[in-house]
Picture (tube, rainbow over the protein chains, first blue to last red):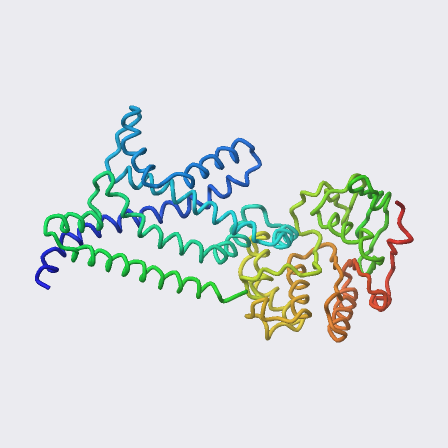
Length: 214
Length: 212
């Protein structure tokens, strides 16, 4: 118990960084995902083409590799040198936006054509139709898949160790190496479990709230 | 007054109808009959502005409506066969949404209109229900109220009796007659002949009266 209290502050510091990456990624990539999913359905071939290449690359390569590329690659290519945290958030946003865009695309396709016809004969324009008719239905449809990604994101944040950011996982690793005990990892595991449980409960609650209609 | 002139539509090299012309005056109900697949719904979708016609014109109350299939407007009130109510909104919200965001009516105006329509169509007790909680006949009355809220120049019903029991069919008949007595211009597409006859209006038989 004494030992746990001793290592807790460093783990909590790591947790702060983990949560920072988590919330920033979620807040930025969810709306971006909506925009990219709309670009996927654009009239302009070039835009659809670029979007598809972007999504293919982001979903087709390991996130770990993407972090390394953004952090070291951008500076090696003399483009820019991003601080570690910014590089990580940028990579996570790029990666998760691609996944969210794909989820939203499926959700948009699930809206029956009749809903668009119904909106048009009432005089609604495309934006109004999207905002008032399609989007609320899309949100309901995609919520379970988004929930899955949220849980994945919690655990994916542990990948930031690769460029030496001090997240929860890395804080635990340091303690394990120093004190030759697995107790810090047990605690780290408990933290991740607690986080995913909390977010699961929140997602369930949102799903339930959206279940007022069928 | 709805006036269709020389409307022609072909699809995949097949002529659905050619030089279709007719008028429907206020207070008149025109019933379009014919077997399934004859092009009744195609005509209705052209009238609604949802799909393009090849040539011809549609005039409503002296105003020409586009026939290129891209129209976005509420001049033609459409009651779809499967209603297309918005599932995430209550009955009242389904009725008030377009007046609120499209016609930009004041809240006092659209709430009053909605209350009148709800009472008129016997929906007041269901005003806070969601579409999934309603029967087919109730959904249809919501669809009628929703269309009427935008004060369309013509009301167009697509197969209004399909999936309805006898009582609901009688009910929609009496609604159409009530609106007729208030001088509405109405057009009904149906393959239900007894229902068509009960409407006592002009009948256009797509299998006989239409050129192809």
